[in-house]
Length: 334
Length: 294
Image (tube, rainbow over all chains, first blue to last red; front, top):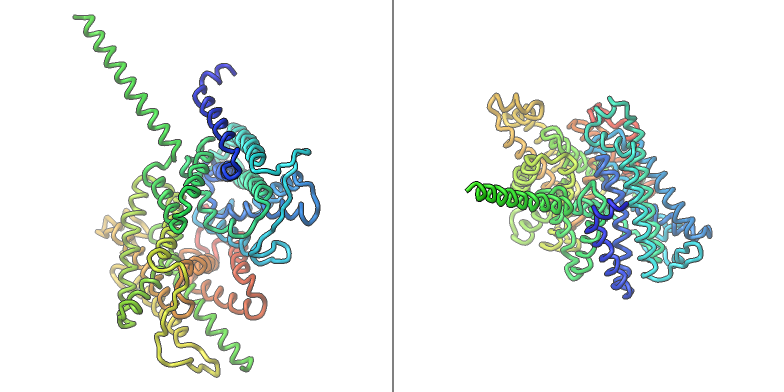
């Protein structure tokens, strides 16, 4: 523990400072809402990292899973009177189940077909929530979703929402960390690196792909439920195909296969969206630009840039140290 | 209107949209065969073609045939540039297929948003091409513009088929699709043929998009849905197989038209996508047994 703290002291300090800053900012309800949304999108980007970053399965349909989480949580509470916390969990479980179901065909397909399968999946969900008016409210959506109630603690303000959501994000990150460090995580990485070799090692490729989909869907569904309870209102436009591309951009921009990457990516892209609201007509172009920049110039995202920058600085420093040492030695000889 | 003429009208409508899916499916298959890649911006080439065609025909007041030819050239150039300068340089950096897919999906976003900025975020009307009113076919009234779509799509499909099978460049394209190393060793410029493949598929999509202009109007997302259904058609027929794309495209054209006429209009798109998922689940190799599973 001590070693861990001293090894990561800067990261921990930064985390504490960021938490303090966010708590100060969150006193204003608008900032609190944005910070809460950071957490929600960070969970989605993290879930995509499990699927795409570690297992190599592309998904351009995660907005559909996000929608299933949001709508099932909201509907369970409103129509069936299920306690909100329970419907959040159930919503996540339903999403995981549907994620696993779609994964059965998806797990057999190569990348091109997988990406279109997931697009088609996202489209179907979008069409259903848009058209099934009796249940989903159609294009008007669902209004007056009650507050989330965590064992008697009613999350009735954006500040409370932000705190609860960030605590849940921390738990999700911990779960992701545990999964990735386990045998299951190793199997995911093996499948990403070389499916044939993974199968040769005795890894049940299809089983683990379905598992990766289910884990990712559970996280995304959870984020969807949190979104519904936070906003108190959901409508289909939050869950369209562009949203799926945005999720993917968040993950790529932050950096895949890291803990902090998806979180940073979600924060940066959402900040960008809020700060440049007046440029909302250019939003698609801006996202596209973000994505192309990442693909062409820093494929490992911001985290990758930071790491390569750090190694470059370290190299420079060690060179300089070596030079002084050598210089010192020469001086001594003289 | 009698039931007979209703059915004839539906059949012509189904043929029209089905032939559009067929040509788009062929363009997917062409790219897949020649470069092993997938272009998620294919539908946006169709949409850009419609906007570019509108600019030539309405804004600049050019002749309709000339507008079609110029649209083809502009879209060909765009497709060529995308392949040669974006996709190739990304591949040279060692990017995986997932990254190429993401790159084309970013392009799709950029094209849609860009067209909204350059032209209009709303649906633009495309002026009627023919002076005559509806044409009478076996008692069914059909707008001549709808027949033009069918004609252009059929012309494009047959032209593409002849080009691939009967010309030297087409043979070179097939050769580089089969074996790149062998093709370049007999003096085929593989990179050039790949660029031309993308150019051709973009040009074809653009011309079809322009023909669709008078039927649906021109708007920034007009291509996205068409391209996804064309993909469904190509998969159903057997992805990468040109004939399969035609049969699959026509199948979805008929299914969609008759489902929305007799069953439901609200869920017709959902039914198409559900079909796609079912086919990918049960028989992803399609009718013509193309390899899609790793």
